[in-house]
Length: 504
Image (tube, rainbow, N blue to C red; front, side):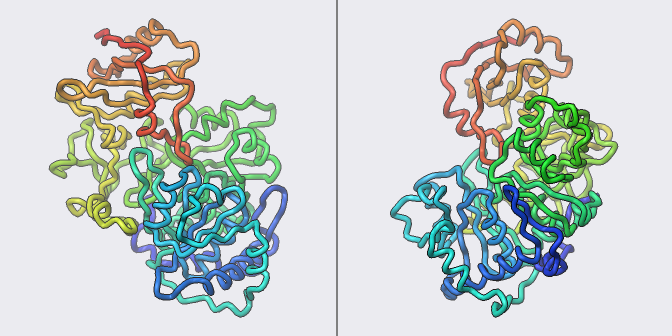
């Protein structure tokens, strides 16, 4: 099944309409339960209160700087019903960097809590509303949900601005329309056969697309209940699955790896969980998760921009993303011509933008993303003889060794086969001409001899792919969505642990 397309024209409000009188399903948080009916009443009340505070001559943008708490969920519903735009602010950013995000996205006000208010500079020229304050309680209680008139919205109307995770540079604000939440919600709930009896689990940060599109929207489309976890915890995940009867969960980055590092329990394979959906989990972790929890892991390929979606099929090899299906293509980034089988190129949508609506306040970045009339993912891949796509890293991580272009991801996957290596990031080390291969690995007890012997035994590691500069670290910096913060990692590196020579 392919991902949603621009023809999937519906509003997010259409997903919420059947839930207005539902009382037996809804939101769980920290042991409390709020029915869908009461949730949507709470959302309408906040839509009424906040809409009255917005100046009509300015963009109706409201920043939200909160952890995963019920107010975040109510405000997401309020934006959908109230016609304003929620701006997801990344709580891992601080001070002037965070203030710059507020300014770029034209926020008229920012909703904070006691926990997050100090993340913003005191000089921020935008009013703050604190959900833990008496002012907030009074504002919400005095607003009328019954008298609020919901505006007419269209599928292309903007519902949210979501900042990219910023693994390689400054985050950009992605325009996310009503349709961009509704279409994937319907597609995924239908694809996975989710029903009103399911319970979805949201522990990824709600300021990011993965949690809201692959979690909240899916639950709403299925008419299912959902659980909000304030912050992801590997041990907490295992407890919550049992506590709430979770059947479906979404992830991004390395959460499966962290969950598998918790002690195995005798009843792990008997829990209610049956499906995990996300991206960037390793093939090893997917297989082990299935064995341990008897839960299928569906790992896809996509991004907040939603210009390209690649879906795994039953026939997809464990180390591939899925079949290459038009209009997706892999092209030479300079000529835009399709590359040969086995050759690394850029993954693109050759027909246009897909569901990408552009970056807010950054026309140059939008134009760059659509250079050549194609949606450019900035991700590298290659196609095998059977037509399956394999991920090869980011274009910014493209290595040029002895005149040959190499992707970082295949080298990282090989390194992760070593039983002592729990995390690996491959970086280009500038040389006189081109690059040499550097590797930053988390591997307690690893020795230089052990690594060299291991690399020499890997038949699919070419001589140009050998890491010749190696750093051993205890941890690697991550974004809020559990992806390696490559720019921060590269900036933090000191003297290498080893310099080694290829053995073949």
